[in-house]
Length: 500
Ligand code: SAH
Image 1 (cartoon, rainbow, N blue to C red):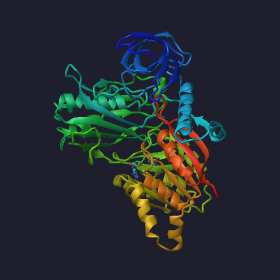
Image 2: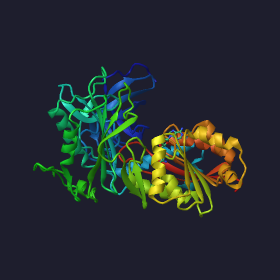
Image 3: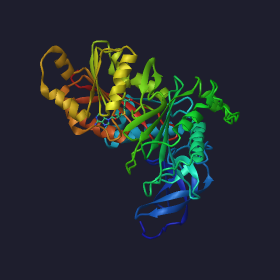
Image 4: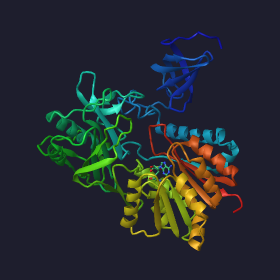
């Protein structure tokens, strides 16, 4: 490769032949590889080079010369600036194919599985029927634009500049009126927004969570201080928002917010209502959004939602799957992979608020859940009680500490032995995957089956290579799209002990 042929800001023509890890288009100009942000596979584009390396460079689309047959009109006008939807300009069917290929590629490259083997065991991707307005949780940063106006919206990709957009096409339609109401309360009461540059100002984020099945909405303001001024006024204003069963939103003084499309209305099948308003105190200068302490201003601290006939209480600090419709499909697959008959002992590691544990408990003898966040375990116990499920036990702690500590005790008794050698272990770790110590203990426990639910197929592939080297075999796998228009992928796989 000739060096120095390309410079920053050069405009080059590129035909996009592949899709990168972050959804970017990959193509060549005279043999030089370019990663082109916002280009769709199949496009021919004029791109502006943003960074040059010896053998490859980065670029941005300036003009689409010949659009790809997979290119579609994005619904959101901010999609190129916002870091949220990386592949909104790609047709949904092509997005699904991309996600499947991404998982298979990682299983092959990092996990060491052969292509033919994967062809034989991978089941078809599970997509969404309607890939819009699916997210039940949004955390909007609050701050100032360059003119000093108070705004709420999204961080522009890889920065902390806020793009003022209160109407995200992935989120719940009523988020807009709730956010606008919070901003109006702030303006009228002179409440400041947090400034990351010097750590001053009060309101940092607004968290809105909706129980799609129950209609309950939680609004939580994250503040850099102990108290909000005029809390009653905030509660009163939010209390005036009326959301009816069709998703038509109005405010009691007569201003009607019914500006929304038919499609948005359809996504609100139940009567939505604000069930709780709270503040979370976060005075640290950090990127972590939520503070540790929650104070209820009105209503309930936790909202409820339902998945597959089970009711879940969700507190502001707990993890809860963001796409409940697809989650039900995901859990059903995990349950089928677990192959339960009512006699099995199951460990559910990284159990969150006990969602998978309770799903499994209905068809198992006993389920043990492990989760590091104490509040999530409190929710898990409440959820077991709410659903009248008695055959579950939950432990607070890191999976890589709780599991070896229990295993090392070596206590006798039938239940202890069954617990030490369960039939099934389910894991659903965060993106970084399972800790080595956790994997080693899982192998020592010798379950017949391990069901691995993963939100990062690279760490999934890494962990599977460890488990398969330890006497297990990859039997089934399926991609479930939980995050349409983003590059994130959820995968569930079944591995089985070879001698069973
Ligand atoms: N299975 C749950 C939650 C999955 S998300 C569900 O489907 O809803 C991953 C969870 O792992 C989070 O709740 C997170 O708090 C928890 N977690 C992260 N690191 C952990 C660790 N080392 N040990 C146990 N839990 C952990």
